[in-house]
Image (cartoon, rainbow, N blue to C red; front, top):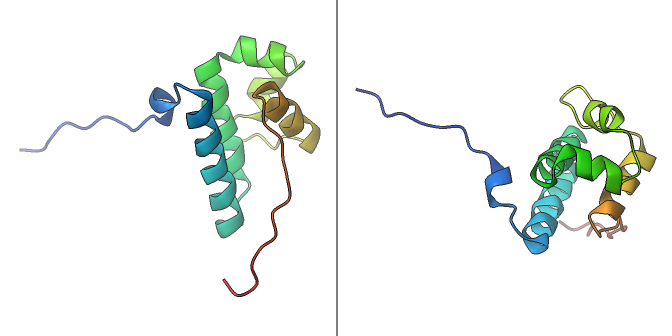
Amino acid sequence: MSEATIPFDPARYLNSPEAVEEYLIAAFEEAAEFGDPRLITNALGVVARTKGMTQMARDADLSRTALYRALSEEGRPELSTIFKVMQALGLRLAPVRVDSAA
């Protein structure tokens, strides 16, 4: 007899600005570690879903369709879109020195 499982949805746990920030920090770190920017796109999509795509698009000054398209699984958002979404979340992109010994 197998146990019933449900898919994990991180959106269920992003109930504060601090949780969103930590989630995105982890996504950016994983993307850097694995060299996969899709991890960032996916994380931003999850966060946008928690905020509501319509509201997120409004806050980021993007059309809802453009935001859906950019943050979809096949999406390849431009840097300007990522900036707008991050700014709408009250966050910014900032360079962090990579320790070459690591």
